[in-house]
Length: 105
Image 1 (cartoon, rainbow, N blue to C red):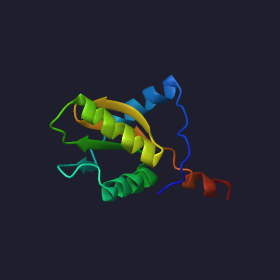
Image 2: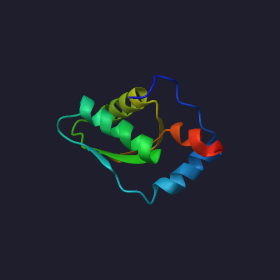
Image 3: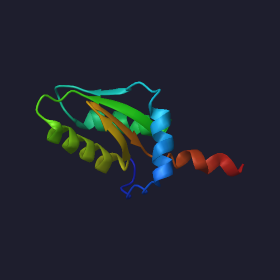
Image 4: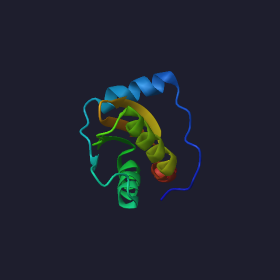
């Protein structure tokens, strides 16, 4: 897992740009009946390291409040920022700091 740091606040134009990019992506993580178990958090963390911007499909039966709770928990545990939530699809973003390390070489 990543270090616990507060995710950066994105500017409105950055969010618009990310929403344009997220439109063409398919969900790569699906949260099913077992809910948000530690293995799912690890996979989300790994996907954010690989892609920075991902979609997650959440199968919740209860309500929008449950989806909001899951979204907040994901973002808190992975230091990600929610970009968009439509229906049962969550789009989150986290800048991959590891990709910046080798750019000066």
